Image (cartoon, rainbow, N blue to C red; front, side, top):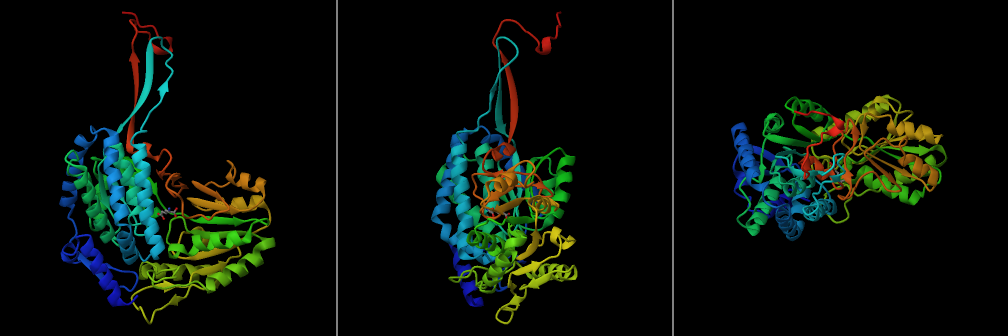
Length: 506
Ligand code: UN1
């Protein structure tokens, strides 16, 4: 895509989302990873404005928590409807701002639609348990109540879906949302706000102002969310370094956190694996989104008997990968997000080589056509061992190849990293598959058999262990993060028996 067409497309989309004036309102530059061109200059919010946004959300909470949950679900249903109408435009804006290929930009919006559908159903299922009381004539139950303002801090790589996972659940649970998107992707966030405003209009008068607030700017705004006691839950997606700062600060004020941090996801390929499936599964997960998903496959742990065949096929696939303009037909790998990401990738490749790794690929591409964009050939690095560099998450398309002989050693290697997000095994051996999923198998929050590590559906809980942060978002019962539980005991008898048989007669 030429510089002019990025400019033309972004001008058209910004106009479509009603953002043309906002896009010229300040001096905060927003660039496209496609060619490095300037998409907008935004005005950033001040800390005082962040404060006011939190105050509006807090006021909205007082009203929204009393709106019946199925009615709250109606707002999310309408938002899903707007997203369906604008899927193509929002998906394209994701591509322009984050550099994703068209199908992945659209897929991300689909993920938003899916979580809206899920949340709408959930709005009639926010139920607690009835629990047997030990006391006669008593009933014990639990209720789930709205929690409060939810602060969302999101990353560039899923600039809209991760907010939607949080926002759709928070809103049906009765919680307003204050969102601090990545500094690299504010335009898609502004577009989401514009679409949400459309849903609010259709919804009618019982939605308070302040249900969805947006903070555009740098780290100081995120810090405001982290430190403000009015923000009941901080849901943060990003690096382990960021999470290490956020977690203790929120804990200090006894706030709740939901952390989605780094991954260092491995695929084990066993002797019985279907190699056709494995090659496709590994390639999508390792090079898709240019290796910039938290679920991207970063390590391949392959049995020595199939190593040669698999690595040869992967090398062949890598050599033919269409890298380039993410909006062009046929492209599978778009650009890295920026020059810093490219430098980090090159530094990791140099370090891996110094540790005895053999690097194939990894070089910069299209630098002449796009000197301000960072396209790379994804890299395969055959490693002698799981070195320090392999154990570190580099947010780029690097796949480290390790070899194993015994199944237990493969599991040990898979688990021997600080992160614990996603994992997979390709095998047709039932015992191996089950052992991988068992308590002594993969230690990750996501463990798959015969599919790759990325591309999870919204219906399951998403998140991971260890340095990944322990949070769970999206499906299953992740909604409980956004509510507070009250245990209620009701006495409908005419006496007052005490629990545990305690006597206290006055
Ligand atoms: C992320 O990279 O932050 O499972 C989220 C996946 C996507 C979500 C990734 N559904 O790859």
